[in-house]
Image (cartoon, rainbow, N blue to C red):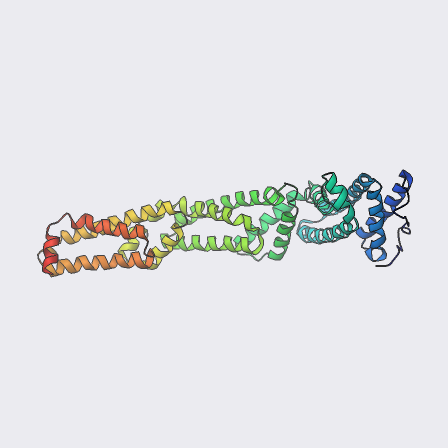
Length: 385
């Protein structure tokens, strides 16, 4: 940066000890205004930031902070109104990329303007409870650019369309999505959450609708184990999506939403599904499928009570079959071996599928006690075994 301005007029020299009247104050402001225009035109190398800082300092020192603050606000707003129109005229397929470039440029220029006005920020802004200069620039950007009637709605639509395409397996520009999300997060200043209001709420609503439809269709066309695999894949995808380009505050919300759509809504249908549900899995030793069910249903613990109930019913029914088998009841060895075989079978489920859950251990114990106590021969045969 040079020691004097080479464009927009020379920077006026003013000594802080001299008195400053309205005419001098407006001359000084016009000098600063021209400098901000040069910054917006990417001509910052032609400016002396030391002298610009001194001019801003003198305005604040001589009680012209209001003139300076309001003037900067007006210049930035005028610049961003022009930018907003360019964004509004931008084609849909180019909007996100164009907006990213303009947003990066705006942040850079606001840092330069903030540096010039550092004294105003520390004194006038603090004293009169104004919004700091950099944040002021963010607020104006969200009011004039991202909040523009022909920008904000298209921005949301483009983001949601890209996410929908990714869910369909298409390749999307996740870096561009991440940059757009970062912009919305950065714009969430001064008690206004732009990320939540202008994106997250609509994202969650569309996600809920998408998975409500997909899960209902999938459960009507697939076996329980296939449905659980699909649910697990979708849950992993949504987790990765947040980790890759959404804000971390969305994680718990989208996971809760997916748990509701994929698991809580359909868990009884899955458990009691004919020829593939929970009882069928116990009967056919589907340890891995039951482990997946337990892993998923643990996300909504109330669903596990129904699995425990089915396990207890399966144990009691198998136990009654042993008690009612004439060949086994007349042979103590066969009888006890059948009981022990049943116990080993469900011990394996409790250990491997249900990860030695205390609730499932208790359900196992209660189920065996229930059917064994119905027949006095059990204790007698155990004593002989």
